[in-house]
Image 1: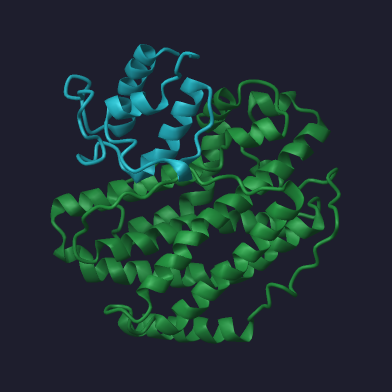
Image 2 (image 1 turned 180 degrees about the vertical axis):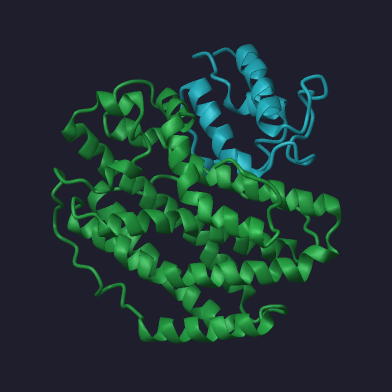
Length: 288
Length: 84
């Protein structure tokens, strides 16, 4: 497995160097965007398939797609800030030997992504939606913090990339938003290969030393992290900004438990969760 | 929602969300973070619950440390105050 990781790191490092992108030249930023277009594939919008969605006319759905994109880009920024910090912390630290060459690219590429996401949100929405997360200090078993860091990154990026792939392909979408999805996906596809491999390595390295209570805590933590990550996709501020009629919090609650929305979440995370079960990281079915 | 109503709704929310404590065991001074009844992963939903209950947005980045310590502290910090 160790050799496998080394080969993966070497291949990903070479690919990152070969495909390096200047984030300041990769995008043209039009003065204004055509706000009559879709900005996110309608099937990915958090209210799609709900009773509220059915009440919206076509212009309202497109308006909602813009604010959903601002939320998607905002939550990417809020996911990438601690990711950049966490990657920097792990450079040249015991246990990171062998992956550091790639961590440099991982960190650089995540920083680049925030240029795209922040640029879009600030220019066209005039804001980034605030982060509603707080981290509390706590004790960890040996290796637990590193494992959880990379496992959370993997779960977060698996979901994000599913949106990127679908939106990058969708010709109904406004061009700038679509290009950002594509640029993000091109880097994320490498991050996901690394993430899957490295998370399995870290789990194999540390899990045997954990108590049954720690192992159960780790599994519960990942389950809660997945629920929280999905929760961020249902933002009442989006519904208010898009002018969706009704109580934005009630709309959020109804959408989150709607069968179509559950099916959507389940479908998007099925592959990643199957991988986590196959590697023994999870030991049961997890509801998305 | 009055502070009494918020307190009751909050207790129910914590028990339902956490799954780690029963209604009888949760006191208003139980340290819910210290005992890991809730974790940082619950903050998003807790903030949204409080925003909905109080009708006021919460800027998480401006919150002081310890604001989610226990039911008492949360209610004191977020309950709507009558106009003076």
